[in-house]
Amino acid sequence: MHIARLLAWWSLPVLVADQLLKFYIKTSFTIGQKAPLIPGLIEFQFIENDGMAFGWALPGDGGKLALRIFRVIAAVAIGWYLVHAARSGGHKGFLRSIALIWAGAVGNILDSVFYGKLYSKSGWDAPAEWLPEEGGYATWFMADVVDMFHFTVEWPMWWPIAGWQGREVFPPIWNIADAAISCAVIWILVNQRRYFKSEG
Image (tube, rainbow, N blue to C red; front, side):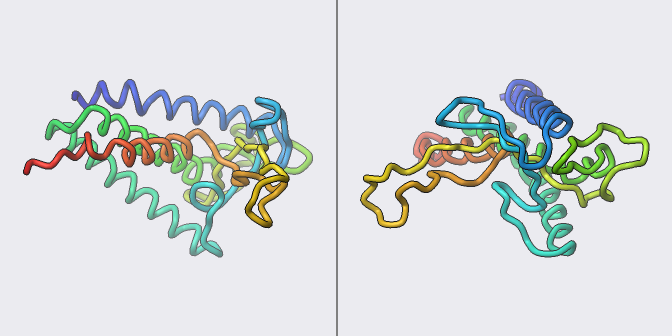
């Protein structure tokens, strides 16, 4: 499968959608602001995190910078692997999944590397500004990642596992980049027998 076509049809749409939605959320929502998307299922809830997917993080500025560097190295490695797998005639479904993972990785890198210079700081009382006159809110590589999707589904009260009743089924808040990575990894696991057929 041609690498340019793979990126154009699978990686680029994820990157564009991810960044456009993040721009809208960051310039329209205040921190913590909510808006229904599909009532009873999912809503917009704007938060920023300084860590990995779904708000996971390492403490301090050192941990923050280490995660940024790890992200960049991982994205380069995934991109190299994608090119190698495409040239080696990898399964189309597998290549598309890797293209989604790469797009998700790059999508969150753009936030953490560049957003500190492109936006003012998001506040509890006012949205961020794009290209603020007074400059951005952080140095290169030290910005926060924008998250906005929040599942509102809760475990029913009759649920047999003690302590789960009435709690959210999936509390983390996430973005399109996170979803692309997660869905692609799950798809690879489900289809691994087709993607990695034994020669023996």
